[in-house]
Amino acid sequence: MPLDAVCLQAVVAELAPQITGSRIEKIQQPARDQVVLLLRGNRRLLLSAGGGQPRLHLTELPRDNPAQPPMFCMLLRKYLSGGIIESIQQAPLERVVTLTVSAADELGERSQFSLILEAVARRANLILADKDGHIIDCLRRIDFEMNPDRQVLPGLFYHLPMPPDKVSPFTVTEEEFAALAAAAGEGAPADQWLVRTVNGLSPLVARELTFRACGSTDAPVTGHTAALWSAFAAWRDTVNEKHFTPAMLKRSGVPMDFTYLHVGQYGGAAEEETYTSFSRLLDDFYEKREQAERVKQKGQDLVKTASNGAARLRRKIAAQEQELAESKNRDKWRVYGELITANLYRMERGMSRLTAQNYYDPDCTDVDIPLDVRLSPQENAAKYFKKYTKAKTAEKYITAQLEKARVELTYLESVLQELTLAESEQDFNDIRAELTDGGYLRARGRKQPQRPSKPREFRSTAGLRILVGRNNRQNDRLTAKDAEKWDIWLHTQRIHGSHVILCTGGAQPDEQSLLEAASLAAYFSQAQDGTKVPVDYAPVKFVKKPAGSPPGFVNYTNYKTILADPSEELVKRLAAGR
View 1 (spheres, rainbow, N blue to C red):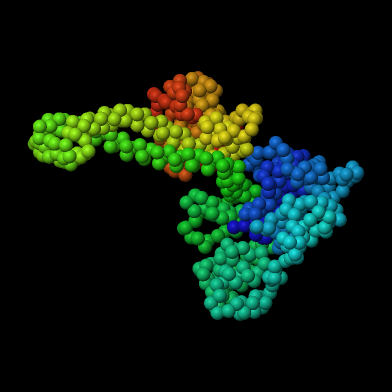
View 2 (view 1 turned 180 degrees about the vertical axis):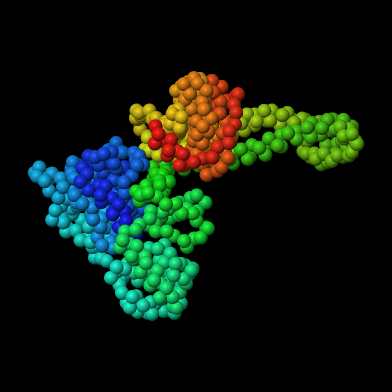
């Protein structure tokens, strides 16, 4: 669900004691609609004004900082760097949060500034205002043509969005509630009526209140007013007492929603996982969504290039396989030529068909041989011998081309897999350079020098380093250059994925470290959502890269196979243990 006003209230209540009085040491804008305030004590406060995911919370997820900061980021640095967060406040029942920051103004004197997050889906914004409430600038400028009723522009006085025409859940009385319910109309769904009538209720919470009151989510208002009021009043007491429970709802292990209270409406169709903080909950919920959004924004052309290339190769392979199958039936052409030659005495020019006894068949059955009426009998025989010879030669050529096309297809599919796991701008730059060097992309002007990227690094429970490649070229470097010959190389069996190196220091690795490394190999592969994934492992000295093979391609021997379950929880735990 979007971050509704009450859930935002719970987040603000959690953040207030954590960030009030904190100094802003750095300001970053990792994405067009995201700002990160780096606070003293190595804490990061994320303010996201993304249309589909506006929110604020402390975050532990690393975000790539662009080399050239956007103009809005430079503006925030000018006014807020070194400032102290004096307070964080939410407008009552509004998805608007204001950070009041005390910082030095242009004259070097202390002044107050307001950083305002409007966390309204599809209209989210981030606004910087001075002590008098005048807008200095904003992430999205809104002029008269965009909204005649409310402009958000530099120099204008900031005012809150127009509140919705709904009753407040904290002031409505039981009599008013009953009167509104009576006016809802016969058969009106209770959950929809609650959303339309009461401010601060999201559809999820409205359905939950209906479920608690009526035992189902699709009950009508009529006949259930008293029960609805009872459930509503209990919910209001919970909110007033700030008894919030950060909870994520999952279906088959995949996050589907989050909320601030226990949800029972789904029964066994969804699992509920509670968290110790809303910041951790929001980090986990939006992590994969942000990753998918990064791929969409930064890697769209790369995905298109790799996908189109893979589709072309699949069509080519299908045509070559058909041609290869036909070439394997070439003995028929040789037999036709032999039979025509053996029956020349019976033939004349202009015949369209020869019926002859096939002495190559154990039963000596008759066979009908099509003839070209324009050719002599000798020329028809020569035509079939030539067709046989051509098919014989084609088999070797097509087999070689088919193998080459399959290797190339495997490579492009591995690139698509890498793109789904790309995390930073550097990851996309590495893959772009790889595709450019491979001739799949046209070079963009003069080639810019790139700093070498580092593989993902983890630490097993026993303390052994585990390295995971981020892309094919890094896989090559990791396996062929960086790893020691006694280290353990791991890779999912016949499934696209990253090269994983378990650094052993020359000693025999313990079973748990080996299993944890295998789990990482399964997680950073196409089998990320699977179970019991087969992972091959072998000492690095038995892993060789064939000459001329595509990036990431290796042959290996003397290997063993282990079954591993991908685990996001394990990935985070081992990353934190570095």
